[in-house]
Image (tube, rainbow, N blue to C red):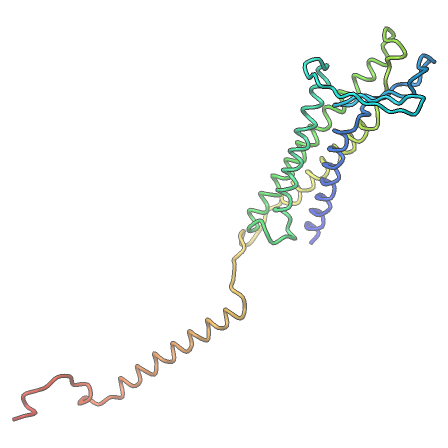
Length: 243
């Protein structure tokens, strides 16, 4: 029972992790403009994400520009795009396998198949967490390095945005969910590994009654056959009957 509760807890953590990873992938605030100096007069805040750049103006207007060219992007941004998409795909596959591997569900086969599905889902969650952690760490390192570089103008300095923190938290959720699923089925199981499908009680009782009736009929026929006289058992005609 405790293992089932841990699996449900791991499933909830993995679900939160994939939701956070999807939100972090789409958010445009992976890095935000740093409030250093007084060079920014017109724009209030600038944000840059994986797919678009957005700017808040002092007039209250908000504009975003999509990043259409992939080859013109820096290497860390291209890597972040790829790994975050792969993270979401792997996490979705892990959720599908986890729904089959949960012990509280009826689908997914016997104990052995459920155990394999749970371990596979845990591996998917751990791999998705790693794919989510790599771009967040690399992106943060690039932002901090550019911020500490004295040759970069103050107007071009950025700080890590909220999407980076969401990615870190999502990676932690995915790691914990994956570890819980792997540990919940790592122990040895004794007894039958697969579930034996039995017919319903009513059908089983009806089959037993039919077998008993058939056995009684066979016994009655055997008793009647044995009680017949030798003359009744004769078949055909004999010449001695007419002599």
